[in-house]
Structure formats: C-alpha cells, structure tokens
Amino acid sequence: MNDDHSVEKDSSKFASKKRRASGPLVREEKQRKWLAKQLLIKQREENQLYRQKWIRQHSDICHTVSLRDVQFVKNTLDTDLPQLKGYLRSYLDLKNSNVQKDHFVAEGVETVRVLMKQLKESRCPIEICSILVKPGAYFGEQNSSSGLLSDWLECEESQRPKVLIVEDDKVFDEITGFPVGRGAMACGIPRRIAWKDIWPTSMEGSSTYAYLLDPSRSCKRFIALDGVSNLANMGSIIRCAAAFGIDAIFLTDDCCNVWHRQSVRVSMGYIAKVPIIEVKKKMLARVLSTLIDSDITCYASTSEKGDKQLSLEELQKNDIPSNWCCVFGNEANGIQEEVVKSCSYSIRINMVDGVDSLSISIATGILLHKFVEKSKG
Picture 1 (cartoon, rainbow, N blue to C red):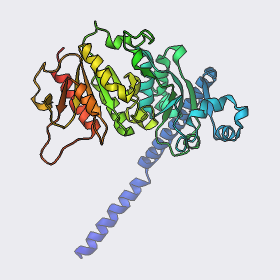
Picture 2: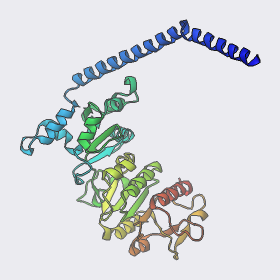
Picture 3: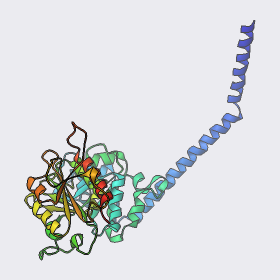
Picture 4: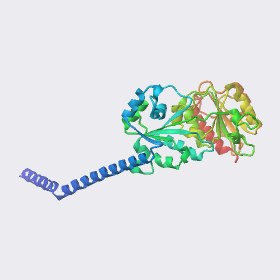
C-alpha cells in the first residue's frame, strides 16, 4: 500500500515538472538563447565589416591573404614574382627551408608584440619588415585593444611593418608548411654588431654602439658566451639577459645561430632589446682583457676549482663591482682555458654532492640574479 502511494507521489512530481518544463519558463529561456545568438551574429558581422573597412583604408601597407593567393604564389616562377610573393617569401615552407642569414622569423603574438614595442623603445631598434597574422590576433577579440593593431599604431609611421592578414588557419598552415597554433609571425632584419663597432678607440668602426663602453656611463653589465651550441639555451639566456638589465652579449663565432627562429621564439623577442656583439673565438680572451683594462671586472662561470675562484653563495652586498662581465661556456666543453685565465675571477655555484653541473640557461639565471643583487650601484 505504501509502495503504491510512493509511486503515485513520484508520478505526481514528474507530471508537475513536465508541466513546468513546457511552460513559460522554457519559452523565456529559448527566447534568451535566441537573442544571445542573434547578438553574437550581429557582433561578428560588425567585426567583419570593421576589419574589411580598415584593410581597405590601409591597402598600401595591409594585405589579406587567401588560400588561392598562396597556391598562386607557390606556383609562380621566380622570374615573374608578384609583389605578394616578395612579402610571403620569408614565411614559405618554414619547416623544410634553410636558415636564412638576411632575415629572421619570430613566432607568437607576444613575441611579435615585443618586437614592435622595441621599435619605439630601443636606442638602436632592429627593422621589422612584415607581420603575418590571424584576424583575431591582429584586431583582438571584439576588436579590442588586446590585438596587435594597437601596438602597430604606436609605431612611428616610417617603422610600421607590412601587415599580411590570413583569411583562416588553413591559409597560415599552407604558407608555413605545418600546423600553426600561434596567431602571428614577424619577419625582420638581423642586427649584426662587430667588436669594432663598440670599441671607442677603433677608427674604422661605427660609433652607433660606442656608448656601451663609454667611460662616463656607470653600471656596465655584460655577458659573454663561448661556443654555446643549443638554440633553446641561447634563447633562454637572451631572455634572462633582458630580464636582468644586461647591456650587451658578446658571442663567439662558433655559437649557434642566435637569429634562428627557435632561438628567437624562446627569447620571446627580447633578442631585439639586447645588442649581440659578434667576436672571433680566438679573440674572446683579448676582448675580455680589453674590458678589464676599461675597469670592467670579468668572471668565468666554471665548476673547476682555481686560485681566483669565488663561491656565489658566499658573496656579500657590494662584493661585485658596478661594472662586470660574466662568461659562460659550451654545454659540454665549458669555457676555453685561455679565456678562464684572462678573467679577473672564476665563479661557481655550490651544489650537493653527486651533482656537478647545471643547464647553462639555469646557471645564467641564477648567476645574473645574484650578481645584480650583490653588485654596487
């Protein structure tokens, strides 16, 4: 009897819910969803119209790239290159193309943003030729200020790069030759600086970067890389250097290509903010001796014990002078012996027994943080 009563009660509840489900509340919910959908469609249409209008108004510097355009460019003979191929050349088939020395490619929205910001912030900015970008990444969601357009507008008119806006993801993938998750890429001209360009006494060199060793400038901070061969490590070191205010990086000619797209990507674009000075490997010891003569103390990062070795953990405030250069070596072979000897001191990071080394990028971050913390000024 009780069971029959319980079943009857449950059935009554179900019927009541069913009546409510087919009532005014459901109609209101359906109406609300329909209105929200219509609003979204309207916003998308307005966004599309705004973007098309903007592209038309800036047709001299902005181009929309379709799948048909890319296929046409790929099938066009080199002797009859259309203007579009000139713009797309640097991005075509990136996965299988050889590394170019006359340009570099940067990947990622934030990386491209950093590159464009350095155009107005850097003392010696590098040239950005073009950006290849998805519509959402350029105009931002709902055409907000989060897009790269706001950064592009902040650039001086003469410095603004060409803008290539792909119609959709398939176009991006067709250009590069592989699926692209990032919303933007940029193409720029590598900045090549030689030792003669910064040494003030060189009569043949340019004075553009001579400020780096200007005697009147305080708190000179440098790092030198002796044969670093891993691209990811290189990019990470550059990012660390930018984070800790390093003025410039000395790079031996047997290091990996600092402008390779993997190195640029890992650096998050900060390669544009830190000048890279290229020196011959056999000249590095002499360069460091010149720095020492210019009142810049040089430290060789090494785990090998020596007469002039310091322990990073034992450093006190003001133990590091205001002007210094820290040298890091190859991942496997370390720093050249003559380079270690040319330095003022060697410096080591204490580790527990059984562990004798760190990744060079990790060691760089630890050392630079401590040096900045313990240096004078």
